[in-house]
Length: 215
Image: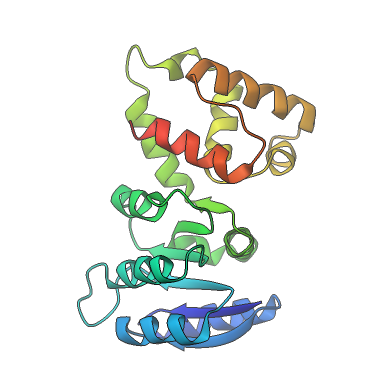
C-alpha cells in the first residue's frame, strides 16, 4: 500500500515514515510543504495520504486544503489529516463531499502505533476515522436538555461514540467486550431513537451520526 506523508517537522515526518514502513506500507513520498504535497498527490496517486493540517508556506490549513483539492481532482482519494488541536471545522470540511476515505486525528494518536495504523488502514480502505475528542465535543454540544441523545442509555452512548469514530460492529463488540449481536441491537435502537435511516455500511453510519451531531 503506497502512502504519501506530508509533515513539516523533520523528526515527526521521519517517525511517521518509519512507523508506516514497519507496518508494511510503501513510502511513495515524504514532503514538508503544500506545493510539494499537491504535486505528489497529483503525480503519484498514492493509496492513502497522511497530511498535517498546517504546512508551509502559509502555516494555516494549507495541508488540509491541498488534500481537499486533490480529492476533488481524484474523487475518493483516501486522506488522513493530523492536527495539533481539535477543530470541528476541519472535520466538517473533510466530510462535506459525503464520500468515505477520510480521517481526522490529533497528532497525539501517533504515539499509539496500533491505533494510528488502524486509522490509516481504515481510511485507505474507504472508511472513516474520526478522533475521539472530536466526537466527544460534538456529543457534549448535542447533549443539552430536550435532545434525543437523552433517550440513549449509557451503553448506547458508548456505542454511538465508537460508531462515529468509524468502528465496525465487530470492533465495537471487541472494545466493549460484548457480542456483535448486542452491538447490532444497540445500533438499531440508536438509529430509531435519533430518527436516522439504518445502514449496515460503516461509512454511511458514520456520516449519518456525524450529520446528526452537527445539526
